[in-house]
Image (cartoon, rainbow, N blue to C red; front, side, top):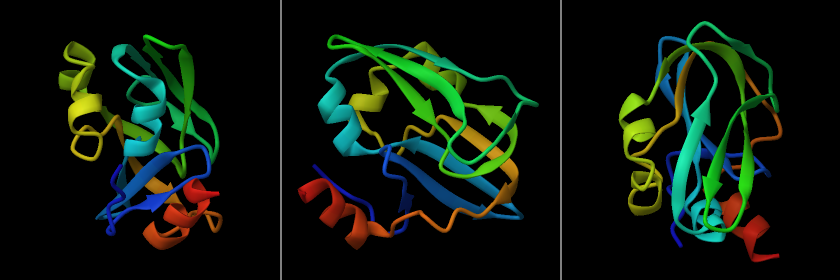
Length: 124
């Protein structure tokens, strides 16, 4: 399992990467994809949706279960990763390269963890 140092993490195992201009990418951590097993299908919110911190942005169906996905930050959805919708298994092979949504007008979340804090959290 890997944790990328340049990302921030939520306790629900989503990551956020700030990309400048008040925008951020949201994805699912390597730990989460390992726990889910082979991903078969992904449902995501729509472009233009406004999401709050902790708000639902979709779900992931795997061989083990269906898991809800929550946004670690708030904002307006500007893009969804259509390539990931077409090939959901990419989430298993490259969880940090397989972002789910892009948000603009991002609101901060003081409860996000840096990589070291997230590693300690999942070790518990």
